[in-house]
Image 1 (cartoon, rainbow, N blue to C red):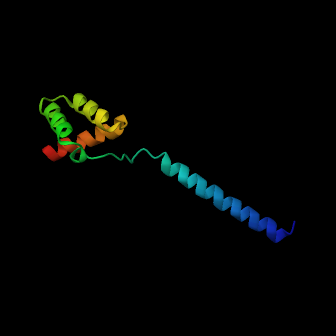
Image 2: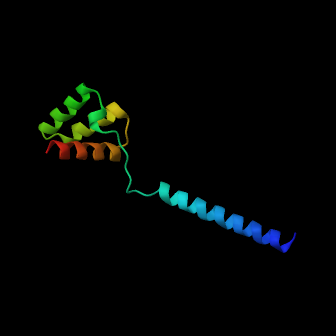
Image 3: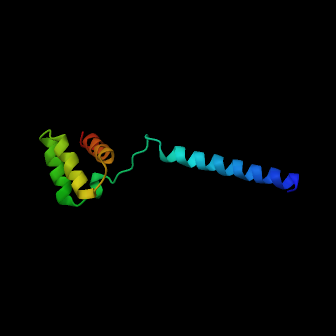
Length: 88
């Protein structure tokens, strides 16, 4: 194999490894939680969540959100946090 071909192959492999490591790091970062806002849910679900929050039952509100959206726990908690913040 020609030396330039070897060098080119090493550079390509290095770039691929760098790209792969970057993507893995991005996907495992815990600071990003995406969720569907409570405002985007059906009105009856919104009202049930608001009722639970008004009674101080945050856990029930999270459960209602998870039941309606099939969201993971951290996303549901973030959505309820935002809803509480918006409600004041």
